[in-house]
Image (tube, rainbow, N blue to C red):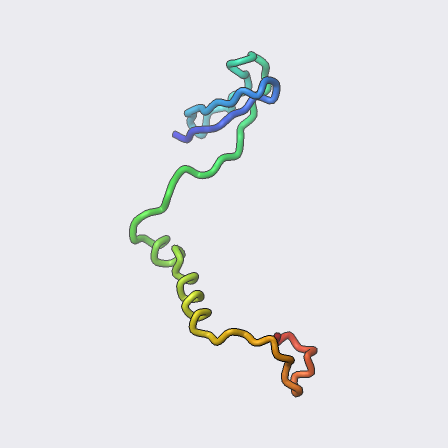
Length: 92
């Protein structure tokens, strides 16, 4: 079951509630009793681990290849464009 974070707009009281996804959101603040509780947006509490599709297809696979290619490429020079180019193209 997920844990939801709530905050009261009236008194500022914050709480976490373990609820089913199908449960209705809490509305009444346990601190002040007013119907001013609202759900907060929080980060996901899980990590993808192991050697499944995430690790082989998305987890840094493209970043490592791009970094290696950038390290092997010569540094870009600040020289003016070739005369044949005319400097009006999108090549630099």
